[in-house]
Amino acid sequence: MTLINAEIKDKIALLTLNRPEALNALNSELLNELYDRLKKLEQENDLRCLIITGSGEKAFAAGADIGEMAEMDADQAEEFAAFGHKVFSYLSAFPCPVIASIHGYALGGGFELALACDIRIAADTARFSFPETGLGITPGFGGTQRLARLTQAAYAMELIFTGRRIKGEEALEKGIINLLVPAADLRDETMKIAESIAGKAPIAIRMAKAAIHQGLDLDLETGMEVEAELFAECFESNDQKAAMQAFLKKESFTDFRNK
Ligand code: COA
Image 1: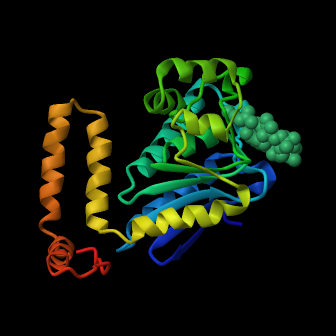
Image 2: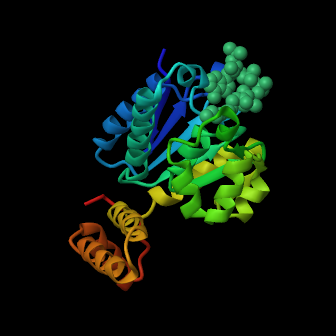
């Protein structure tokens, strides 16, 4: 049985965590498969958007696998966290935009997986928390770093220290998710955003993603230099020439070719 289902349609890839009997808990086998799938997908010539979601009714992912972690010593735990970081950083730096489509529980490592994506769309059934401190550990797949950067350090501290579970409204208010939708609409609303991204110039989108990601770790002036370089690279694409010429001729243009 495969722990990650992969589908590609109209240049949009959908990866589904497929371990519903354990609420898609992230064990080493699943993380390995996710990494392998991502590496294969990266070879796809003209992928425009990637969606990550969970199977089953109850969860996006209910965290790292507690049964597996219960048996680890400190060295094994460090290796487990390092591999989680490697997979999630690979996902975060994936060349095309990545959307987390979240229903039900997104706890611990599941929350961290969502935080490693570029855009988060949540159903009204979504519940987010970091239960780790109640299990005698810290978050270990990037949660202490990404939540503090995405929101505020004090807010990340409160959620991580208390393990408080939050609903979609609070996640939206705090900027953790981009969109909150009724559960029945989650797939359609996710696809709408993915299709909207897929309809724009793919080279420009990849450059914009790279500029934002690189800029977050830089001072403003250096970030501007990165932006100028990536902006300039777009001018080497046929898509830029074709789209601008079409505008000047007052024609509509959607036929982006990724070159
Ligand atoms: N690791 C391993 N197994 C997990 C898991 C995890 N993080 N989360 C859920 N599961 C397993 C349960 O052990 C159970 O397996 P079983 O049927 O073999 O007993 C199955 O998934 C269903 O979970 P269950 O607890 O019966 O569902 P529930 O609806 O009663 O509760 C949760 C759902 C999410 C509240 C509960 O499963 C939970 O607290 N999970 C752990 C969350 C967590 O602490 N995550 C952070 C880990 S660092």
